[in-house]
Image (tube, rainbow over all chains, first blue to last red; front, side, top):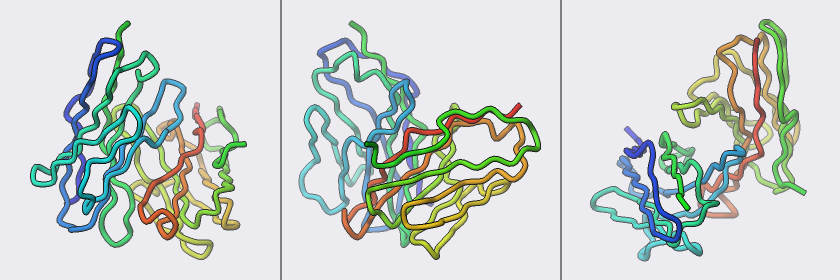
Length: 114
Length: 115
């Protein structure tokens, strides 16, 4: 069965430090994609970063990077130099299978302390 | 202007009422989705549509119906609202053919309260 697991319900980090949010996935499909979204307290869902299963390098987007370890089936989000505005819920998602609908994790709440 | 819009943004209704949530997009995407979000349960897919003539049930379609009036419009109806349909509802769009990946772009959400 296809599944996304985010084991950290809540995380704290000091401003300007780096933080890693964990995501593990399960799929038997050889082709899949992994996504991270941010949901601030205002409620909107913001796409952050994408990693394809065949991508040779880890994806990066500004201060966001995805630590993709295929053998471990993990796709952790790394946020460098945390800012107060990074405080939000973060969701990991995967697309796989014929229809390639997204499968979502339950999210991790990140609080950045000043 | 936002690429994906939802109306209304907030709605309070009473049990048994029929309501419609509307979604419009200017991204030109073929695929559209309706999700609901409940605290602790993440995002759950209600319905999705891969083109105008295609409608598919998601994991929690009971009590809901949808209409894909055009490529740009996808509406969600609650035929007879009940309190456990109180949630945050999201519309999303994607275009696999263009992006070569299933990146979904979300509307701002509709907060629905059923009394």
